[in-house]
Image (cartoon, rainbow, N blue to C red; front, side, top):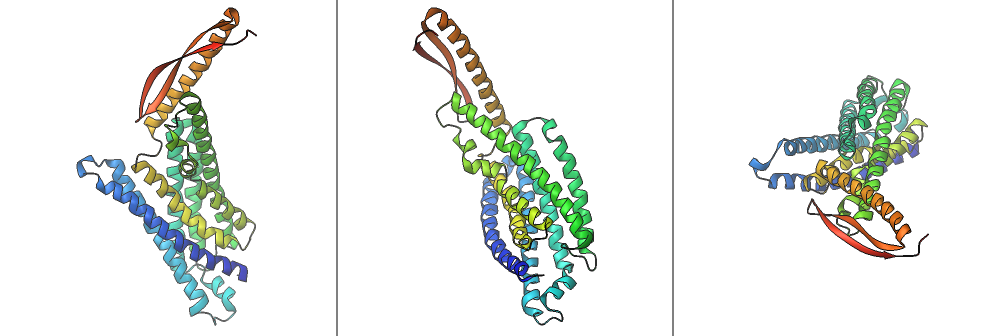
Length: 331
């Protein structure tokens, strides 16, 4: 491999070491919230999140340890290897602990994509919106296993031969899921944000519509770095080694951030969706009433419009009447 590829691998190792510390903090915060709940109040969802988060962390740890050991063997232990560092990489790309790291990465990607599909379903509440992504997800599982087989075989190399071809197809499937889910989630959140702003105008739902919440809910960083890695990997760019490291870490961090928001009660759930749907219906009703009122005013030149203003506080919906005298010239 070229010097640029090795630089990318080295910088990537530094990057994942920093991001691993961030992952430990987020994991610790999530588990702290879950463990603070009394056993009798802990449901199956809480236990699932505990297991899910722990699996993510273990896979992340395997990936970090394997990359660090591989770098040490590559640049220090075997610095005088016959044929140089490039030959050593070609001869040892399928070493057993790298195969373990690849398997951990594939498992994390499968879990992260599944969680992202489920979160999209939570926001849309219709199975039709995730039918095709589920089929693509099943295809990605098969391609991921195939990629592991070719890359882990003796003489296998993710950057050459059949392993590279299957890896490209696998990454394309995962990116198709990531991009479609991210677009659907962001679009849904922005739609509800505009609707509630027109109806409420009090900022009571800001926690669901902030920039940070959109980035976390849609796993935007996971998708962005995954797309960068796919493009650089497919064209054979040496930057692929750098983006691979960041992509692998955000495959863990993005789902963990979603879990943290869920367990702290800041994330979207079915109740939130139902409330937002009610607000959206109220917005349409207000628009219809306003249209009908304007027609009446056109005939009488003056009058009053009585609208229903829906407010959301503490997760409950309340109705209050808003009367506004309107005086304007007839059209």
